[in-house]
Length: 194
Image (tube, rainbow, N blue to C red):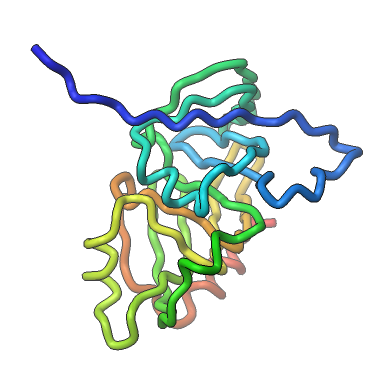
């Protein structure tokens, strides 16, 4: 019996010293992935135009020198680990943004999504006049939200992270819908969210 080929994205995290900033190399980006029960952190060298495209083209991520921070507070380091893309709820992409040549005139639509302990808010970009929810359904599963907020509960209480780009895994979201007008303000005002 033949099995399907698996597309693997190998990410080699570069160790950073908390006292030294990441060098101004435009191909090194901050990487934070949110899984159902933990966060994966590090920085990586981006060898493609957009992180979203890399994630959509891969079924698994081969992480090197990764750090997991469980939502219950435990920390685990691993030299090598395979993480299925289906285990990721979202990925926070740091600057720099993707290749400007891929940007087109679009209209922003506010959306909100939930997956497990996470609630996310941000803007998808679609054609003016198009239905944003139909547009979401036609895209590959990893969907970039701009000017995004993600909140989640840990053993220490509620946390809120802001991201210029938050890449949400539509396939693992429990729900995804257009955002209500005051939804972002209510998320930001959530008690305990730093």
